[in-house]
Image (cartoon, rainbow, N blue to C red; front, side, top):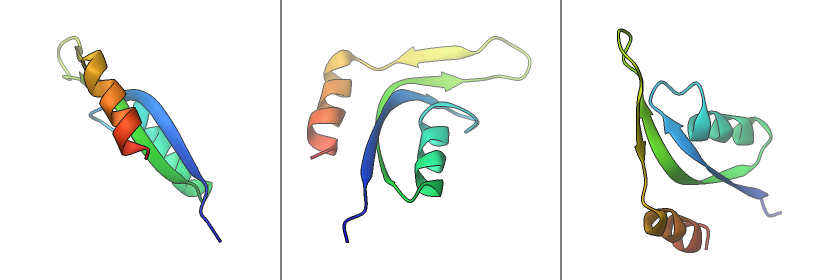
Length: 69
């Protein structure tokens, strides 16, 4: 029997409470093999604003085209 797969295209949250990390946890709970394409990285500092680092479009496209194959 083949395990279902799902692709999440989202940002990566360093603390793991949102974005790709949460999507992959949800997929696992649903017995689905999770694939991911990261669109940005978010770094939260407890005493300052968060920093968001976007990923270039060609890198996102490559993740989707080559990673999900």
